[in-house]
Amino acid sequence: MIHFDNVSKYYATKQGRHYVLKNVNLTLPTDRNIAVLGPNGVGKSTLIRMLGGADFPSKGKIHSPEKISWPLGLQGGLQGSMSARENVRFVARIHGYKNTKPIEKLVEDFAEIGKFFNEPVKNYSSGMKARVAFGLTMAFDFDFDVLLIDELGAVGDANFRRKSEALLKEKFEKTKLIMVSHSLGELRKNCQAGLIIINQNLKYHADIESAIKEYNEYYVKTK
Amino acid sequence: MRAQKRTSFQIMTSTVHALLMREIKTRFGANRLGYFWAIAEPVAQASVMALIFTLLGRSSISDIPIALFLFTGILPFKFFSKLIPQVGAAVSANKALFTYRQVTAIDPIITRALIETVTFIIVYVIILSTMAWLGFEVLPDDLLALLAACFLLLTMALGIGLLLCCAVTYWPDAGKLFAMIMSPMFFISGILYCATMIPEQYWYLFSWNPIFHLIELSRDAFFVSYTTPIGDWYFASSIALTSIALGLMAFRINRHRFIN
Image (cartoon, rainbow over all chains, first blue to last red; front, side, top):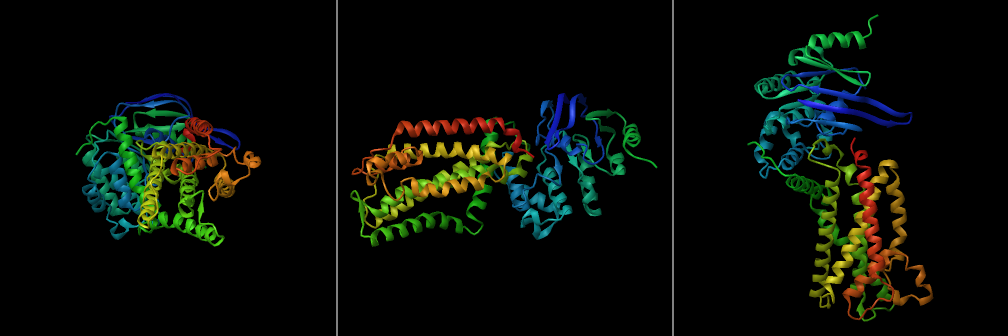
């Protein structure tokens, strides 16, 4: 379970406070995969970042007894001036591993980006970043209860998709997903439930199809 | 290979360790040339100054060899003026790493303060040992007081650094303004001269400056033959305490601004 206690999140802009979420009270189940739906700029990434502890609500609290991963996405997570290997080492160290070699090896094998593994991450293509970001979470085997994914699948090639899907399937038993994607096909395939951001609030649907339906009615303009 | 439940302190130690490994690499460069520069820079500076003073016909100041006199001013000042911008930029340089919940804004600050302090101590010891080898008398008269002066310098720099760190989130050019303020400080903080060389009626022009006080105090501690007429422990400590308190408060209030 993930609990939202009166959560508000706003950003200070030149035109005053821009609210992403306003007084949200909600309990999300963590026994199924949840798709986060909403158009660009509505706050999906912010939500994922807050769930992962990378950002904080302006007011209120999000808390959960489960082990939630950090947000896996193309922004953040990998420091551009460091190579993938250094990033992997860093993450291993903050999690208390003294010997980082086996983890480096695992990520290197998963990412399959060859010599670029030792180049600064800022020189990577987005697909390469996605491979490293994904490999990083998988290699550790932290036994996360919930894995947060922010549009990682979109940039991967067929090979990477096949690999990552196989890995996820293997973990589905224990690890559930909360994912953001603009590909409804991908969401349908992976998720059973949906979460829509509407009017600075979160609306949970236990069924993905009804979530997609509401999303289409509310956001998708049909001429 | 599941990670065990760790205490907050253990998490912080591993985070600082991880940041330390990362920062050392960027601070001293991948080719290790940075270690060389850390020592070469103050040595070069002091040597040029010592040369100028010697050519002017001055080889000692109150019985203190000129090179040693300069080092005891230049090194603490360098430490101070280097630590502040380092701490000020600590958060922005590690932004992407805050994605991980283990990493909080104070961690890179602690890391950089550690790196600069250890570098300062190592450079100080290396330079003094080299001078001892060249035949100078380099043992500090009152080591404890010297350490106390350095500690106050660290506290003050850390406080100002934290304030700078907050200031840049409101106004990115704050760092440039700070560099502008710092550049004349080298000449008015008693690095190339000491209080006894200034006529007494002009002391008030210098006595407001806490760095001047600390450099005076550290020379007082270092040399038996020098007694500072201005350096005031009470004044320097109050400024240091005030700046660290303000710095920590500002940092605490602004902690959410450092993320995203």
